[in-house]
Amino acid sequence: MVKYKAQSLKFLVLSFSFAFLAFSFRLPCFAQDKIVAIVNDDVITQKDLNDFINILRIQLSEELQGKELEAKIQSLGSDLLNRLIEDRLILQEAKKEKVQINEAVIKEKIAEIKKKYPSEEDFNYDLAKQGLVQADLEAKIRDQHLMRSIVDRKVRSRVVISPNEIADFYERSKEKFILPVQRELEVVGFKDKSLAQEAYDDIEAGKSWEDVVKNRLLNTDNILVAQDGQLRKDVEDALFKLNIDEVTAPLKVEETYYIFRLNNIIPSRQQTLAEAQGAIRNFLGNEKMQKELSKWLDEIKKQTYIKIL
Image (cartoon, rainbow, N blue to C red; front, top):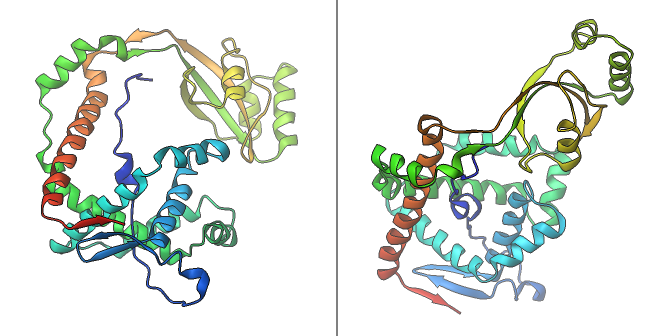
């Protein structure tokens, strides 16, 4: 794996805003209806900010869990309101430009998110825990696509990375493009633990990997892994203890039991410029994108009424 990874525009992916109409006049709603900021003719209420944080938590939960997730939310602190204000500015620009979004894209994204849940009920329950419904998520995705579209049109079009810039960066940072030792593995998966154990026992008893796979009509996948912390530690430890042609005992990952066989060990080596240029282009592109985006937002803010209450 390349050590020097391109930094993504997280706040474009993870930040979003949407307005909700007040529909209740009960006393408990008053605190949430409190206005926390004004952006031109738009108001941002405490409920907007709370919903922003809740949906951000749902998206971050794809990568983080428990204390790590909450620590990430807390680390953003007051920056969350600033992000929400910038989202409003970007959305206002999208509306000025009359940017249109294909609604089919929204449905596809919702379907993709739902696939990560065992059932529709689990999906709705997870939203309800955050005080949200599917319509809120759809609004977020719609706003997210509007923001991406206008940013692509107004900002990304300014970003150009020349071959000389890529080559210069590579020469200055060669040590960042050294591939670690990699392992080529073949893997089979089982939904049933006993079937996985039987297959493993047959291999341990002397049957060949090929025969076990063929006799059980198993599908195999070939993967390439490095000891770089991207794998779960127990899985990484098991894979990097193997010798050529050895197999692991069944390893449970989520709801599947996997058996891995080591086919080859690839030594560490220096990546060539041709191999590294994609990662370099992404990194330099995102770096320039951040600068251009900040510059564009600063230009907009000069012509905008913003008041934080």
